[in-house]
Image: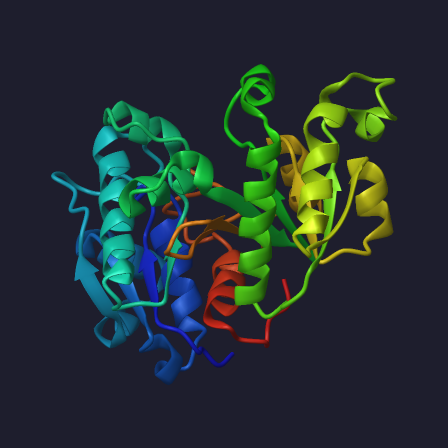
Length: 317
């Protein structure tokens, strides 16, 4: 794997598997490639994770910035407000360093939403943090999952289906598609072929299953095609995914996009926050508190995400 970009790697929740999978991933890279990555997080966590994984000798070779320091001892597998605050502080520091030109992209290890909310920090996923740090509206930053040969951008994310329906609009769908296309171009696909999922089953079959697609996704697709994008649909998500003829898929709701990627790449997907002036990706799995601190976490998703963000062509996701 040859890295073409400088990456700021935030450890995520320090009580989860983030520190472990970060160290294990870096241990698999040649020293020259490790030098392009800087870790953001508490040194005490790195030291304990390294001891658990037998990687103490690796620590002196790593670039590291002390951020998100914990006030007490490390308690792997424990959900706590201090750990939640640490995750946000480290990710924020990495994002700011990237915005200042020190890095080309940010990789954030898994957070724990309950821990963050216990810390009193408003948060609905890394896309919302990216929007806050970059000073843009949260609705302008979208999640794209990459894994199992799929790239799926989500128009809506962590909210009830009713809330998502209430705020869906032609403009929101178009924004998500444009953000997804720009991200594909950054990743090397200059003119991606896009499949837009419908809101209702079978994209409503006209208005047989409801008027929502006729009102929202049909005009959005028309406008996008008029703008010169290769957009098919709206179509049923099942049909689009069965045919696998597109570079980018646009899911209307969280589960439309998460289920296929998690099915095909359960522990190896990347989760990109797109639409702002900083490219951030996490991994497509959680902080795995049940195995944190046991030395058995799999770093595959971190390695794939490093390859994706760095422009390496060695790893196909």
